[in-house]
Image (cartoon, rainbow, N blue to C red; front, side):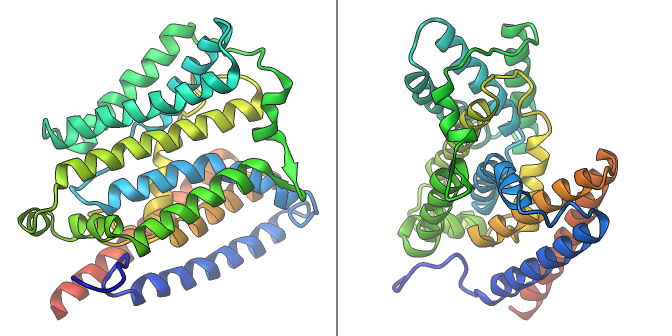
Length: 326
């Protein structure tokens, strides 16, 4: 195969999806402005973007895992957030510099992601079951080692990443999420690795017969997902200046929702970073707007669930149409 690698051989569905998501985001903004008079205050945008990086990193990791097919999914990312935070907090209480402890936390997240990849791709345990098991294992370990209590006392300078702002925008958004998103987008659309990821998602058997090491690639993506979850954990600790053993609770399902809502097909082979980023903005806009309108969390989850159902059904319909034409 020659020429520039792309996320899909046919990009039109992704472009149409991105336009639809942008329109949906504008509708969400308008709806939240009607529900809450506080939504259009000047402080809302930085406040909204404060929430975006953590979920955004998890959503991007989930996008990569799902995109490579299998079918792959990682339900342990929330527990990785919790366990990495506890580990970094524990190292800090032992006298390790907080930034060195954070770097070691990134390595731990990568190792936890590697474990997931090994279970799914070498031991052949279905990804849903394997990562559900590690979700409970990692989360349980975080709670057990802290007796359910948060670890605090981080130095004020550590707050630069999670609380600091540059040009009025959160540092975590400007200096972490945006660079990561750009790097991953370039990787998927301009490199051989990106072409291999999509090839695995479209037809892993054909990819294997063409000489691609499918197992190694997918394990690497699980490891990268773990790294991104660990990075999200560090941002969370920097934001709250504490490591909570339940910090990532519930984030795994939101990460899956964001990836699929953004156009990543649940069985792989189609997806990309721009759609995932806009999906993050949609979900965060709904969460913040409904909170400002004092609408209960149950309704927030219900609305996001409806979006996910519609998203999956539309993607499945497109896949069937594509299959019929081919």
